[in-house]
Length: 304
Image (cartoon, rainbow, N blue to C red; front, top):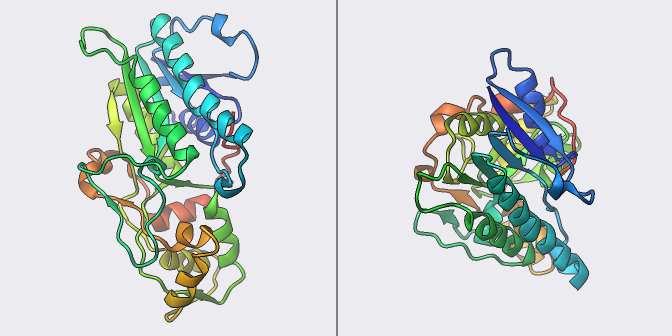
């Protein structure tokens, strides 16, 4: 039986993984959670845990309107706190430390009409303090990964694309609400990597059981366009949504005034060759995941 300590009480991913394991009848994993908000967490013993799933972090920031204090808070939590947690895990004899990073370390989505496919040759290039704080967080935890694998401490980094599921945050619920109201949506042939929460939970389970290390680039089997996603979401509600061409020029103009346009209609995908475990953890296709979302409720917020 593997014991996993989840660092963060109110994380969407952490709560989802805890529930996923709880509902798996033959799971060889048990989970516990701890808050890193309170003073003195460093003095509590993590001895006896096989893995730490570090989900404490900040995301979903309005980069354009963030003040300096907000920026520094992102570095304190996404970088400094992650490094402190990794050090404690290693000092207390934990065998594995899992850090949740983001595709955002490669910068923002490409503008409409421009390709952005991340391959093994692509170097991280954060476009803002949020992406930079996640990349520096990776570096902080990797500092404790020994070169000699006779040392049992392993660091695993998951560079996650957009995560979606029941009660998830970010752009996905906005698109879902839009699909419940609009009869027409712009047809833009963009390509986005996404990952359903249950597929992610299965990947984490596999990673814990195998004590994996390194960097993983998970995503669903399908690379999806925003328009097709909205159309399928409409189908789930028995609504027919027409994907209308001719909006590209207007959207490109709008992108000069708000970064939200490229977040929704821009391109950002992982090369399929990066995902070495896809066939093992991708239990749900896009359509299956959207149906599953209507049946289950995963609660939580993506914050510490």
